[in-house]
Amino acid sequence: MHGDIGPFDRFAPLYDLLMPRARASTLRAGLACADREVERALDVGGGPGRAIRRLALPERVVLDAAPGMTRRARTHGLDAVLGDASQLPVRSGSVDAVLVVDALHHMGPVDDVLSEAARVLAPGGVLVVREFDPGTLRGRGLVAAEHLVGFDSVFYRPAALAERLQRAGLAPRTVESGVGYTVAGVAENGEAK
Image 1: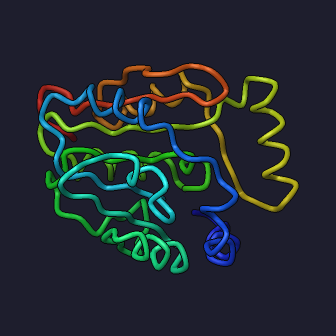
Image 2: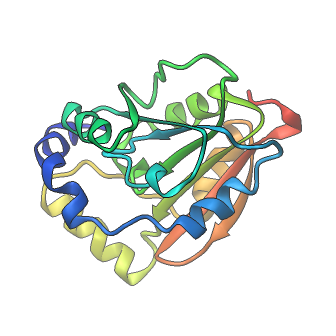
Image 3: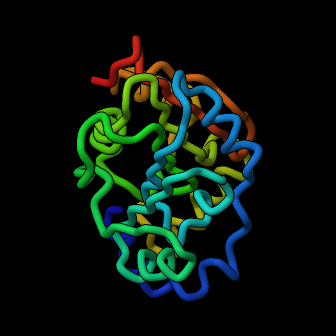
Protein backbone atom coordinates (compact mmCIF):
# COMPACT_ATOMS: atom_id res chain seq x y z
CA MET A 1 0.00 0.00 0.00
CA HIS A 2 2.71 2.47 -0.84
CA GLY A 3 2.50 5.43 1.54
CA ASP A 4 -1.27 5.09 1.82
CA ILE A 5 -1.34 3.03 5.03
CA GLY A 6 -1.42 6.01 7.41
CA PRO A 7 -4.44 7.73 5.84
CA PHE A 8 -6.37 4.45 5.70
CA ASP A 9 -5.50 3.70 9.31
CA ARG A 10 -6.92 7.09 10.34
CA PHE A 11 -9.92 6.74 8.01
CA ALA A 12 -10.88 3.28 9.34
CA PRO A 13 -13.59 4.41 11.82
CA LEU A 14 -15.49 6.25 9.05
CA TYR A 15 -14.82 3.89 6.14
CA ASP A 16 -18.09 1.94 6.34
CA LEU A 17 -20.12 5.13 6.62
CA LEU A 18 -18.57 6.89 3.62
CA MET A 19 -17.85 4.11 1.13
CA PRO A 20 -20.57 2.49 -0.99
CA ARG A 21 -21.28 -1.18 -0.45
CA ALA A 22 -19.51 -3.63 -2.72
CA ARG A 23 -21.81 -5.22 -5.31
CA ALA A 24 -22.33 -8.84 -4.32
CA SER A 25 -23.56 -9.81 -7.81
CA THR A 26 -20.27 -8.71 -9.39
CA LEU A 27 -18.22 -10.51 -6.75
CA ARG A 28 -20.25 -13.69 -7.17
CA ALA A 29 -19.78 -13.50 -10.97
CA GLY A 30 -16.02 -13.32 -10.41
CA LEU A 31 -16.06 -16.23 -7.97
CA ALA A 32 -18.12 -18.26 -10.47
CA CYS A 33 -15.06 -18.26 -12.76
CA ALA A 34 -13.28 -20.60 -10.34
CA ASP A 35 -12.74 -24.19 -11.43
CA ARG A 36 -13.46 -25.37 -7.89
CA GLU A 37 -15.96 -24.74 -5.13
CA VAL A 38 -15.12 -21.56 -3.26
CA GLU A 39 -15.16 -22.05 0.50
CA ARG A 40 -12.00 -20.26 1.71
CA ALA A 41 -11.57 -16.65 0.59
CA LEU A 42 -8.96 -14.04 1.40
CA ASP A 43 -9.89 -10.37 0.97
CA VAL A 44 -6.53 -8.64 0.34
CA GLY A 45 -6.51 -4.92 1.09
CA GLY A 46 -10.01 -5.61 2.34
CA GLY A 47 -10.17 -2.85 4.92
CA PRO A 48 -13.11 -3.51 7.24
CA GLY A 49 -14.27 -6.40 5.05
CA ARG A 50 -16.56 -4.26 2.88
CA ALA A 51 -16.44 -6.79 0.01
CA ILE A 52 -16.16 -10.14 1.73
CA ARG A 53 -19.05 -9.34 4.10
CA ARG A 54 -21.30 -9.37 1.01
CA LEU A 55 -20.51 -13.04 0.37
CA ALA A 56 -21.88 -16.04 2.24
CA LEU A 57 -18.77 -18.21 2.39
CA PRO A 58 -17.75 -20.70 5.10
CA GLU A 59 -14.33 -19.13 5.66
CA ARG A 60 -13.66 -15.41 5.14
CA VAL A 61 -10.41 -13.67 6.09
CA VAL A 62 -9.45 -10.03 5.60
CA LEU A 63 -5.82 -9.02 5.15
CA ASP A 64 -4.93 -5.34 5.33
CA ALA A 65 -1.78 -3.31 5.97
CA ALA A 66 -3.59 -0.71 8.09
CA PRO A 67 -4.07 -1.77 11.73
CA GLY A 68 -7.22 0.36 12.07
CA MET A 69 -8.81 -1.50 9.16
CA THR A 70 -8.09 -4.95 10.59
CA ARG A 71 -9.60 -3.82 13.92
CA ARG A 72 -12.73 -2.65 12.08
CA ALA A 73 -12.97 -5.98 10.21
CA ARG A 74 -12.90 -7.81 13.53
CA THR A 75 -15.81 -5.68 14.81
CA HIS A 76 -17.80 -7.16 11.91
CA GLY A 77 -17.01 -10.68 13.14
CA LEU A 78 -14.38 -11.40 10.50
CA ASP A 79 -10.99 -12.98 10.93
CA ALA A 80 -8.48 -10.27 10.07
CA VAL A 81 -4.72 -10.34 9.60
CA LEU A 82 -2.31 -7.44 9.44
CA GLY A 83 -0.07 -8.00 6.44
CA ASP A 84 1.53 -6.95 3.19
CA ALA A 85 -0.20 -7.88 -0.07
CA SER A 86 3.16 -8.51 -1.75
CA GLN A 87 4.20 -11.01 0.96
CA LEU A 88 1.04 -12.82 2.01
CA PRO A 89 1.36 -14.66 5.33
CA VAL A 90 -0.63 -17.55 3.86
CA ARG A 91 0.43 -21.07 2.89
CA SER A 92 0.80 -21.79 -0.84
CA GLY A 93 -2.29 -23.35 -2.43
CA SER A 94 -4.41 -22.80 0.67
CA VAL A 95 -7.32 -20.58 -0.45
CA ASP A 96 -10.03 -20.98 -3.08
CA ALA A 97 -10.36 -17.28 -3.87
CA VAL A 98 -8.50 -14.03 -3.39
CA LEU A 99 -10.42 -10.76 -3.64
CA VAL A 100 -8.83 -7.36 -4.25
CA VAL A 101 -11.70 -4.89 -4.39
CA ASP A 102 -11.08 -1.19 -5.13
CA ALA A 103 -7.62 -1.53 -3.59
CA LEU A 104 -5.04 -2.75 -6.13
CA HIS A 105 -4.21 0.83 -7.12
CA HIS A 106 -2.97 1.40 -3.56
CA MET A 107 -0.69 -1.65 -3.59
CA GLY A 108 2.79 -1.98 -4.95
CA PRO A 109 4.62 -3.46 -6.63
CA VAL A 110 1.53 -4.81 -8.37
CA ASP A 111 3.26 -7.74 -10.10
CA ASP A 112 4.42 -9.02 -6.71
CA VAL A 113 0.87 -8.69 -5.36
CA LEU A 114 -0.57 -10.67 -8.28
CA SER A 115 2.15 -13.35 -8.04
CA GLU A 116 1.47 -13.73 -4.33
CA ALA A 117 -2.27 -14.08 -4.97
CA ALA A 118 -1.52 -16.77 -7.58
CA ARG A 119 0.81 -18.54 -5.13
CA VAL A 120 -1.81 -18.86 -2.37
CA LEU A 121 -4.60 -20.06 -4.66
CA ALA A 122 -5.51 -23.74 -4.56
CA PRO A 123 -5.70 -25.56 -7.92
CA GLY A 124 -8.55 -24.03 -9.93
CA GLY A 125 -8.85 -21.08 -7.54
CA VAL A 126 -9.67 -17.56 -8.65
CA LEU A 127 -8.37 -14.06 -8.09
CA VAL A 128 -11.13 -11.44 -8.42
CA VAL A 129 -9.89 -7.87 -8.92
CA ARG A 130 -12.28 -4.92 -9.02
CA GLU A 131 -10.65 -1.66 -10.11
CA PHE A 132 -11.26 1.66 -11.81
CA ASP A 133 -10.44 2.28 -15.47
CA PRO A 134 -8.19 5.36 -15.77
CA GLY A 135 -9.05 5.56 -19.47
CA THR A 136 -12.62 6.70 -18.79
CA LEU A 137 -13.59 10.27 -17.97
CA ARG A 138 -14.73 9.40 -14.45
CA GLY A 139 -11.68 7.19 -14.02
CA ARG A 140 -9.35 10.08 -14.91
CA GLY A 141 -11.21 12.22 -12.37
CA LEU A 142 -10.67 9.57 -9.68
CA VAL A 143 -6.95 9.33 -10.52
CA ALA A 144 -6.61 13.11 -10.24
CA ALA A 145 -8.53 13.19 -6.95
CA GLU A 146 -6.43 10.42 -5.40
CA HIS A 147 -3.20 12.16 -6.38
CA LEU A 148 -4.55 15.50 -5.16
CA VAL A 149 -5.06 14.08 -1.65
CA GLY A 150 -1.59 12.57 -1.71
CA PHE A 151 -2.20 8.90 -2.47
CA ASP A 152 0.50 7.04 -4.43
CA SER A 153 -2.19 5.26 -6.48
CA VAL A 154 -1.33 3.51 -9.75
CA PHE A 155 -4.31 2.53 -11.92
CA TYR A 156 -4.37 0.03 -14.81
CA ARG A 157 -6.62 -0.25 -17.84
CA PRO A 158 -8.51 -3.58 -17.96
CA ALA A 159 -6.38 -5.05 -20.77
CA ALA A 160 -3.15 -4.12 -18.98
CA LEU A 161 -4.36 -5.74 -15.77
CA ALA A 162 -5.44 -8.87 -17.67
CA GLU A 163 -1.96 -9.07 -19.18
CA ARG A 164 -0.37 -8.81 -15.73
CA LEU A 165 -2.68 -11.56 -14.42
CA GLN A 166 -1.59 -13.78 -17.28
CA ARG A 167 2.09 -13.13 -16.49
CA ALA A 168 1.35 -14.19 -12.90
CA GLY A 169 0.13 -17.56 -14.19
CA LEU A 170 -3.60 -16.85 -14.14
CA ALA A 171 -6.06 -17.09 -17.05
CA PRO A 172 -7.83 -13.70 -17.12
CA ARG A 173 -11.54 -13.24 -17.79
CA THR A 174 -13.30 -9.89 -17.86
CA VAL A 175 -16.36 -10.10 -15.63
CA GLU A 176 -17.50 -6.47 -15.79
CA SER A 177 -16.50 -3.47 -17.90
CA GLY A 178 -16.90 0.25 -17.33
CA VAL A 179 -15.48 2.86 -14.99
CA GLY A 180 -15.47 0.19 -12.32
CA TYR A 181 -14.36 -3.05 -13.96
CA THR A 182 -13.76 -6.58 -12.71
CA VAL A 183 -11.24 -9.09 -13.99
CA ALA A 184 -10.97 -12.63 -12.66
CA GLY A 185 -7.82 -14.72 -12.98
CA VAL A 186 -8.13 -18.48 -12.74
CA ALA A 187 -5.17 -20.69 -11.92
CA GLU A 188 -4.19 -22.13 -15.31
CA ASN A 189 -4.39 -25.89 -15.74
CA GLY A 190 -5.42 -26.19 -12.13
CA GLU A 191 -2.12 -24.83 -10.89
CA ALA A 192 -0.91 -21.36 -10.02
CA LYS A 193 2.72 -20.41 -10.65
